[in-house]
Image (cartoon, rainbow, N blue to C red):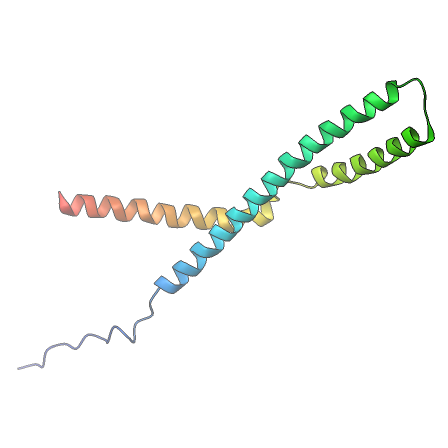
Amino acid sequence: MKPPKQFPNSSSQENPEPEFEQELEEVERSLLSLKERYTQVQSDREQKSQLQQRRQDLQQNKMQTPEIKAELKHIQQQLEVLELNLESQLFSWRSFKKPFWQAVRFGGMGVIIGWILKSCAG
């Protein structure tokens, strides 16, 4: 009689869960970073609009005092900085590609596992 087959110890098998958790945390960090950048872009756009309105109001003032000219120069400098910030992409495909495909991969795996479990249960 043959001895029963010995299955490898579960401790010797590589556990994929820590890798999954690590990848999931990376996706969450990337999403948080994207949200923060989006909020910054919205804030910059609003500030740009306010500065443009203030510049327009000052330029319409018939009496250009040195203080008004200095403020206009300062506003112009702030607008240039905001333009540079807004011209930088909200996100680049390179920085978004890896988390995107990880989300697709893990999300797809979840759907497939769900279908398998549902078909086994029913």
